[in-house]
Length: 63
Image (cartoon, rainbow, N blue to C red; front, side, top):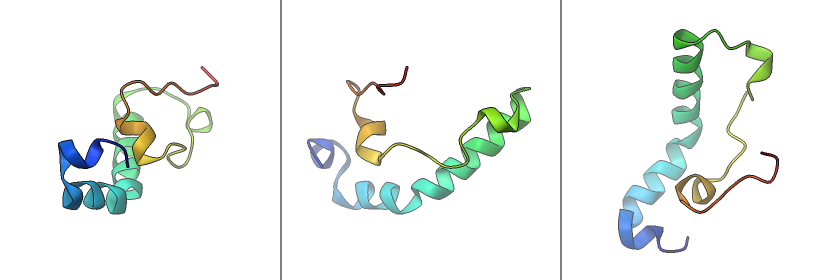
């Protein structure tokens, strides 16, 4: 888990890990409501781990 525990605390990290799918669903709905992005151009689920999302230095290879 890297240094994330030091900054977030173990319980906060575990909460985010457990809620990641729900957070992603909410974000997906928000993007659909606020933009004109086509549904088929968006992933249906989060393709990144919580560690990747929290790592400020992480960059996906396919950018």
